[in-house]
Every structure is written in structure tokens, then in C-alpha cells.
Amino acid sequence: MLSRRALASALALVCAAALSGCAREQAPAVDYVLLDGQKASSQQWAGKVMLVNFWATSCATCVKEMPQIVATHDKFKGRGLDTLAVAMSYDPPAFVAKFAETRKLPFGVAIDNTGAVANAFGPVQMTPTTFLINKRGEIVKRYVGEPDFAALHGLIEKLLAEA
Image (cartoon, rainbow, N blue to C red; front, top):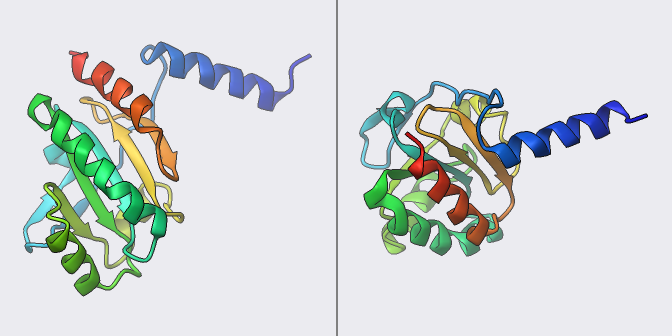
């Protein structure tokens, strides 16, 4: 007899493999401010595949993976992917701004001063944590730690192909 945990794991695998047909968690509605002071909202994500990356300048893995986040953004941005990097509340805004400027980050960077965005997503407590959201605003995948970027790119391809 299967335990509840084994059954839940098996069901999760079936749902993940199917990529559709299973109920998914809706991404939270959030408002945030970008480094340039522009106010933005998750409502602007409608119809896009979104990569939302929670990170910190003090996180070695975050710094290591950022060039791959940039490469992923650059590879798919013309096809409907957008990226948002959300700096954690404990990250000094001056450090975040300097990092984004020196690395020429080509996507929106938000400073989550109050932790409200991280809390809405979980709460997010470990960095990096990255969410992949489909065009319908559903969370398809949550990565804690550095993603397998080849697998991530394959999943993004599938999500971009969805109607």
C-alpha cells in the first residue's frame, strides 16, 4: 500500500510530466517598484511566460547563476518571456543598484524592501529561488537553488508554444 507521501509524489510527477491538465497554483498578485523608481504589478505579466528570480548580492549561488539568468532572458525575450529579479529585503539597495548597473542586467530588478513580494510567493526564504510562470499566470515550476538551465530552457520552450 502506498503511503500518502509516495502517492502525492507520484501524482506530482504525473502532473509535471503532463504539463497541463493538472490544477496549478496561481501566481500571487503583487505590486513592486523597479530600480528606476517605476511602479509595476504582476498584472502586467498576463500573456507572458515569466521567470521571477529571488536573489541577493550576498548570495554566492545567486551571483554565479545571474549570467545564465541573463542568457535565458536574452534567448527567449523576443518570443514572450520576461524576467524579473527580486532583491531580498535584507539586500542593501545601493548594492543591488551597483550589481544591476555593472552587470548590465537587461530585465526588471525590484527591491523588495518590506519582504511583501517574497512573502506572497511562499514565503521565499532561501536564495536563489526562481519561479517559472505560464501565460495564464500559473506557477509551473519553483526552483530552490540554481536550476538545471538546459531543462529550464526546454520547459520555457513548451510554455511559449502553449496558446
